[in-house]
Image (cartoon, rainbow, N blue to C red; front, side):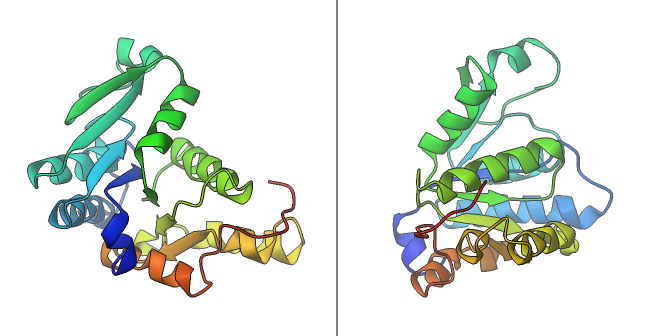
Length: 202
């Protein structure tokens, strides 16, 4: 999101796992992303908690001076699933409200490695882009080639005509946080087209 994107992106929503993962590179990349957000004076929107990659990004961004907003559904706030919120806490009624609130507060999205919840989040926001509900940039931070198989699946979906090539381009995969900040430049060159004229099933 260097160049033109840095000029208008003020808040980024990050989707990632509540586990640190097996390889230490995952947590290192989460910490680094939080530092990069702070250095660029970009604020963080996330789903709450301070464990795993979620905690790595939020703590690093907060310590670096970014405003951090954790959005938590009431059901999770009452239990022990969400342990501690870094920065400001915004409690909402449902999981759908959580996604809708994060969406409304964010100018762009970056996804780090994670599990089912992370996959649900990125595909939710990507399907909204495919349906022209928004034109916000969506980045996939493919740390240690974690998402290679997922990207291959999307390529196969295009090959088997369940996904258009333009819809496939909605998600931009990068290896580092710095590369993620070139998403808008790629989009302006036609590599990140959220406004495809034809769409197949989501």
